[in-house]
Length: 96
Image (cartoon, rainbow, N blue to C red):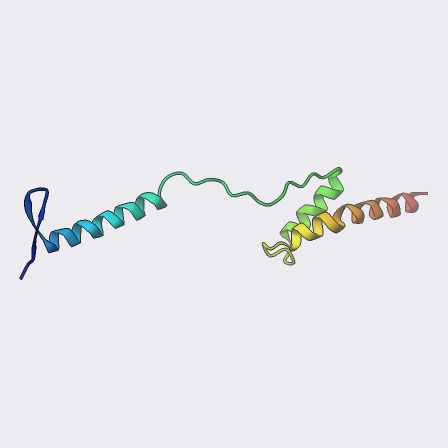
């Protein structure tokens, strides 16, 4: 038993309306998921002042303590530059 609705002057069955609704929703979903993908940002820029500092930042990014969380940002801004300065100072003392 099919219920008929009057749409734009024509008789349309309820099963046709249901299939059209599901098809439209599937098409909208496929359209919204498709297309070109925008590149995701990998966090803040490194802004390294030396190769050693850049190497340290890359090491922290790739290490297990980073884990894709905000720990990297905190470590980078709070301690990375100070760590590199201290390491350079110790290296200079060791050379003399």
